[in-house]
Every structure is written in structure tokens, then in C-alpha cells.
Image (cartoon, rainbow, N blue to C red; front, top):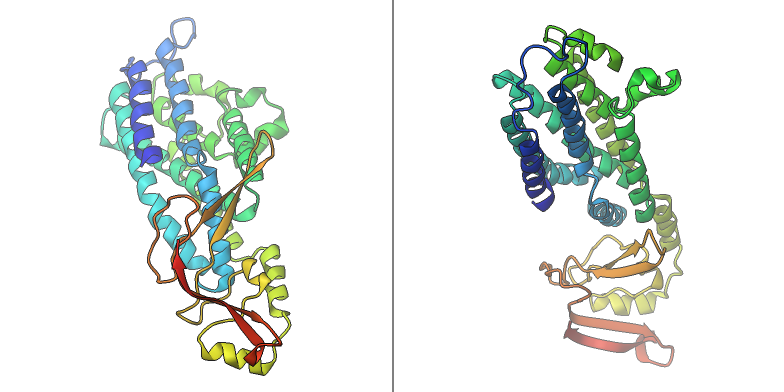
Length: 363
């Protein structure tokens, strides 16, 4: 709520008020001597800022995305969550807020600046904002699924969003870039969003084509630019889905190690199974096995956070479900347990094991 609703309202109100009625300045972009009007330049800056803000908004809290992906990888390895279920859950939890936030931002900016005159104009402007926001959502999950370290994801996202903004065609116009870099900007979604908005606003002005010519856009067709931006979303979504299907190599090795555990003798195993429990093994902390008995406790997951400044690590213990299946509130490192039984091998005890904990409960 804070990121997708409050942020767009605050930023949209402040920036929109500073550009009050900027979009209404007649039918010409430049003066008698070919110098652009101040309002014309401000509109170009507005398009660049709003497009960049919509795209970058979903990359702000990359830590949350990374933790969701880490939890999904453990659930995927334990056989309790499929890639399809994870993708659908993320879409239902992220997309509605992204769309509503984009509509709020579009409405506020459009109303303050008077960018267009009818519903069709607002529809196009809002669609570009929504597409950029959705691309940010899908792109952040794609990076989270592709890279397994939080520190690398945070640093990489910062580099990516800065490069995307620089190569959008506004801070540095395409015609002044080296040819190979200008060609590479066609892989930049923000470049197409900026090109579409500029063509949408200025192509029908009397001197609009002359004003847009120095930007070296491929086309002045704003609908074509929107179509290309839409293709970026589907390609990125496909890449995220592809990476979600691959179990990380670390978890695969852990699973192989877990399958090679030494077997207990049948007498000890039968004795433990008769009481409804499983013999604990240290490797169970690496990868939780698929729950086959109601009495088995769900393993807590330890999230590691690495500081980008000092490199030090902080750990947070997160328990999503208690043994009884009830949700626990997030109060930091608190673990609830009930009726815990723990036995260890002991050759001198009857049955080959000795009870260490019996029906222990607490938190």
C-alpha cells in the first residue's frame, strides 16, 4: 500500500502542481527562431520523470522479492509449491496494486498538467504508465529468480535502472550517441515509453515533426511504441517463468545429499515410526522434506541479509506456520512449538534409542 498507493499520490501531487497546466500552450512547440518553449521542454522532462518513476517504483524493495523467491525455492524443493502456483500468487498479489497505483499517478499528473483534451488521450497516457509498472513487477521477480544473492540483486538493480534512464533518449539524445549504443537502446523499454509519449503529445502539432526530429526516433507512431513496450512485458514474463522452473543447483545438491543419508536398522526405524515420528538428521536443516505426517513440524527458514556497505550479515528467523498449522504473527525471532518429541540413538537403551524430549511445548 505504501509503495503502490501512497507513493504515487504524493509524488504525482507534488510534481503535477509544479507543472500546473504545462501541457496547454497552443499548437506550436517552438518560437519564431526555432527555440522550444519552456512548457515544451518541461513536458519532455515530465514524460521522462514519470516514465522512470513508474518503472523504478517496483524495484525499490528488492529485498522483499528476494525473500519471497528464497521461500519459494525451499517450498519448490520440498514439493509443496509449483512454479505455476508461485507465479499465479505473485500476479494476484502484485498486479492489482501496480495497476491501481499507475491509474492514481496518471490521473493526478494528467489533471494537473492538462496533457490532453479527451478520454482517448488519457487512455493512452494511463496505459503507458500501467505497462511500465507491470514491467517493473515482472522484471524484479525475474532478477530475483535468476540471481540467488540479495546483495548482488540490490546492486544490479541500481545499475540497471540508472542505465535504463540514461539511455532512454532524454538525458542524452539518440543522435549524439555512438551508433552501436543508439542501436542497443532498442532493447531499453524506457526508451520506447519516452518515444511513445513524445510522439503522442507532439506529432500532431503544426511543427511537431520538426521538433521531434533531433530526438532521432524510429517512428512518430505512438501506438507502435506502445505495442513494442507490451512485447517487453511478455518476453520478461516468459523469462521469469522459465527461471522459476529451474531448481537452484545448491538445492539439487542438498537433495542428493539428503537422499544418501545412512539408513538406520529396521528395528530402530520401526520403533520410532510406531510413535508417529521421524528420526532427526542434521541434513534436514538444509532442505525440508515433503510433509507426510501431520505430526511433523514445519521447519523455520533463516533469512540472511548482507549489508551493501560493510558486507556484514544479519539473520532473521522467520516462522510462517506452527506445528498445528496456525499462522504466527511476525514478531521477530519467536518460535512456537507444541508436543515436541526428540529421540537419539543409544545402544544401551531398549529399542536402540533414548528419549531426550517428551511432549515439550512453549515458545
